[in-house]
Length: 91
Image (cartoon, rainbow, N blue to C red; front, side, top):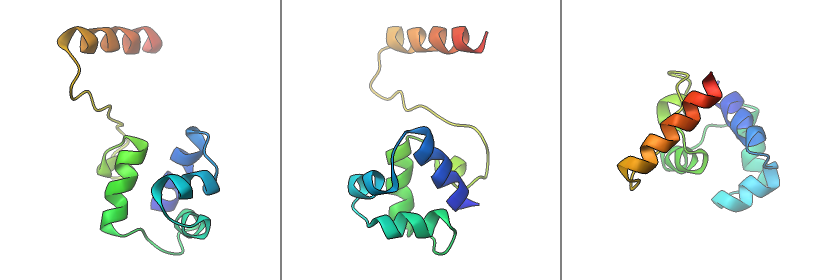
């Protein structure tokens, strides 16, 4: 569920509910409610969450398990180096 994915991403980034709430401009209680699946974030907040966690909406909504890295603005050389790093990690 969406709340589980939000909790997973928050904990993976080492953020507390309080810190995440400050970062995105909501209350700690709001984060808690999302994570416990008591309420759903608005569409505007979903967009903010995708940017905050650097993931696609599909990933956040559990429509797929692929995570994406935004490489907009990087040179071809920088992209090549990132690909090498990822390959090194995977192998």
